[in-house]
Length: 120
Image: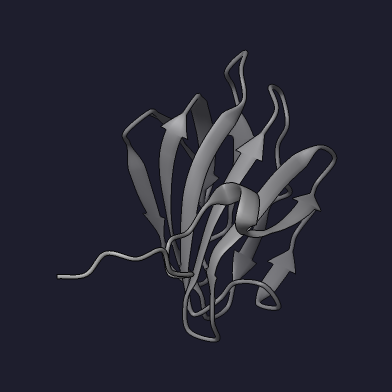
């Protein structure tokens, strides 16, 4: 088997970067019509607005830090190496409740950008 450097290897510093919320960062690792894989970072104390997606289901996996998810009015606390799934139409938001950056992977199917209904 021949080993060579190819563009299939995903690196944060080579991915499409964007800023969301006040000071939060995101990097698109995979972005197609049917699948989105993003690494996001939220500084301490930051949160997003309550919202839902009509078609997209999402899975969040915590890499570091501690997150509070509000899903349909119920709070779930997740820490490193834990994940949570959110189905279409579930009202949800995430908040960084740790004193360091919250880093996580969010997988959406189909993509959630353009399928977001803000409630706040």
